[in-house]
Image 1 (cartoon, helix red, strand yellow):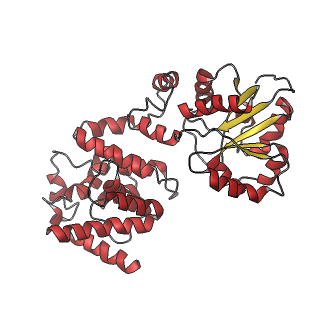
Image 2: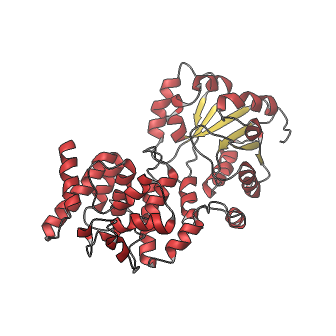
Image 3: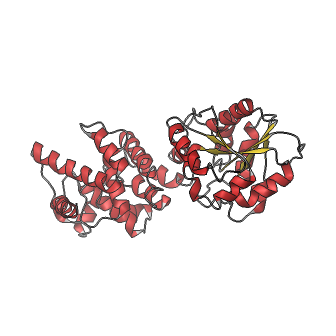
Length: 381
């Protein structure tokens, strides 16, 4: 920790920084200029109540130190507190150490949900807040400000600077899939991540999959993983389950010999030599060749092409991600994506209905389980 003159104007920029991306650093530099801060404190969180961290405290601090300029100070104050990192709990310590001439910086999305923070009114009594909006947020933010007119003691300001939209979670997902992140990370941070093998938890399973399916199929698979993971938090699904189910959904769509699966009656025999056989076989391959034991994950792989009645949220998500990932370009896909983004259940049924109507129109065979699913969810609708 650094000693700073109590007379200086200090910005406090907290966050997970997991990892710190280019937009984080550009935002810090822009706010120093706009607000005329003497210093800006980069304050990595230790154990935020709303998210799980991937990189260690030490790694996140070191990454920030690689890109901090002479007006930025990386502070371990929150990390040293340990426990759940509620803002209201560590702000008094920040004020004690850095003085009361500080401004606490939060993102526009955070301020729109400020009433859900721990003791938000107490925070407003402690420090002035600077809200950094993204494109399209400012009108909502001004409406939100009215809610705090009578209770705000220190003041709330909306910054002029609007950062480019960038997501640490998307970067982590892309790194885990070995996809490029050149435009999202500073070179020094990218090099640190590579040298320290960060965000590479799925290396072995990804390598095994890469060696068994085509490059084209692997590209589609990565698209399915990225699409599904965008909704994991919103649907309150386990990240690892979403990642594995999406990654292995097409693991049997290759030239492997899976005759033993049919010989041992491990899947319905009527699916043999059909376009949907790889899904049923995939659940067996995921278990036998990749060591996946989770029944919910295996079931999501099993029905990702046919659907079925009484699917789990995970299974519905993988089914839709397979249809809607960014690499798909069929007529109507954009509308389906909009429906899905607005309402998960309506989006799922729209995808299922689209499949059934498409097969009916082109005279394709509809597998009985798909019709069962369609009739079941139609009755629920």
